[in-house]
Amino acid sequence: MGDMADFQIEQGLYEDEDDYDDDGNYDECYVKTLLPSREMLLPWLAADNNSYDEDWDSEKTGKWMMFTKDETVDAEWKEIKEMTEDGKLGISSKVSTARPSVYGLPNQHVIIVYTKDYNDKKDVMRVREQLGKMGYKQKLYYKTDQATREGKYGKGSWLYCE
Image 1 (tube, rainbow, N blue to C red):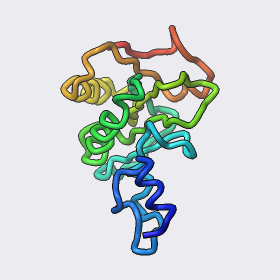
Image 2: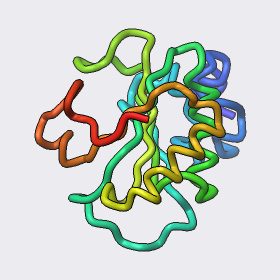
Image 3: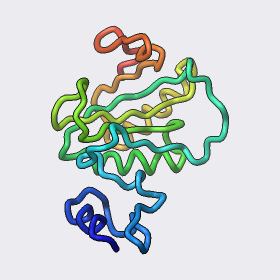
Image 4: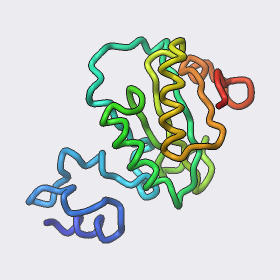
């Protein structure tokens, strides 16, 4: 393995040596194993529902948003990522990283789980129920991607608060 790969593992930027090929280059699964609390290059890490093959209309997508701390984001993201990829949550999910942002607060992150259609309340609430089973018992906010595109944030931008 190359010196850069050894350094990055030593610094805790990646989970283990399996993230690299025999020459020390990043394996194709590299982005999937990054730790959000340590990643400084990418603003987001993402996961897709591997069993979902239908098209969806980006004008209808919405998202549950969970706000979390640096200390717990890696473990929370690992579970959300696995549940998303296994088809047990929405169509995709993402997490903010440690990369500085004009929108973010230091040592805080947001984990987002997308649903394909905010009008499909049954599916939206199915995802919320699953998040509750995963330990997210606090109030969570759900908003449409359209609201985000229109620059609507904070109070009044939420479709659901459950």
